[in-house]
Image (cartoon, rainbow, N blue to C red):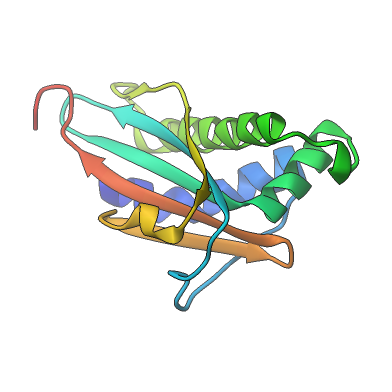
Amino acid sequence: MLEKVSQNLTSVISEVLETMFFVFLEPQSGNLSLSTNFVGAKVVIEGPDFGCVLEFLAQFGLLQQITSDFLGLDQEEVSLEQCQDVLKEIGNMVSGNLVNICDPEALCKLGIPTFSGTSLTAAELDGCDETFAYGSDDGILLVGLRSIAGTSGN
């Protein structure tokens, strides 16, 4: 199932961000390890034989723009708490869509998104099975995919 999640992640992220947040990000390549000033959130997906954690890191400038657009506020009016909530909502929507696509039998449980910090670096995703990068002029969104044991211990 990890392979299915990996194969569908980019299209799901594009669909969610474009449809719900009116944001158009392009896949990025190259060395992003020096990128800093990220806000983070995580969502756990657990199934009987499979589990994964999707870790979202958004540079604050990008997240502030997304939050501003989503809430209909000027960027200067957006609080850090609102940005955190929007990043968790992005994680929730992306993860929920992935579960719908990759788990037609509905065996997986989608966890509640959690906030993982501010002033983070790309090193937070070290150890992930795969890392995906998307960006615009406003900043970078990184998504790490980390496998974990399923609920049956596999």
